[in-house]
Image 1: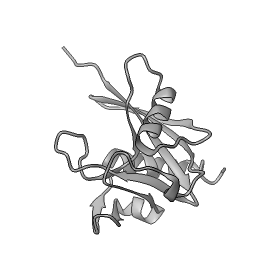
Image 2: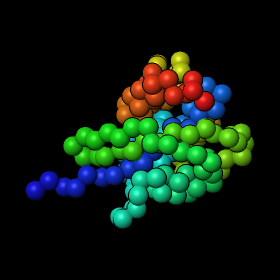
Image 3: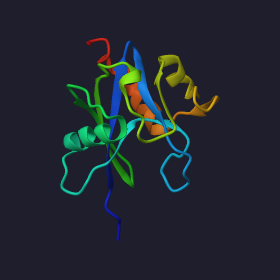
Length: 147
């Protein structure tokens, strides 16, 4: 019997042509430990994806953008991912890093390279593959230029 898909909701947040990323904790029990990914997380049973992303952003950053739109929905054999996008309307100094090791704005060049330097750790870490692929698809979509 197949296990039900894990449903997660993730945020592509942008400011000045760069994208907000979270350096995930190095805990071996989490998915993508120690890599750069999006803020977001599991959707609670009975919760809608759009409600889940707002809850997750408040929990992890103490912030949610005034407007979020669904960009992409992707599934593999284990996970159904809902990618939302919205403008980061506050400076990084106004965000509270409540989960993860670091946060930062990632340039298009860093996204294409698949890695980003962490100021807090003083080292380069990889971007998660699904996160990098979603960002590249978002950049190619032209939605950022419409803002």
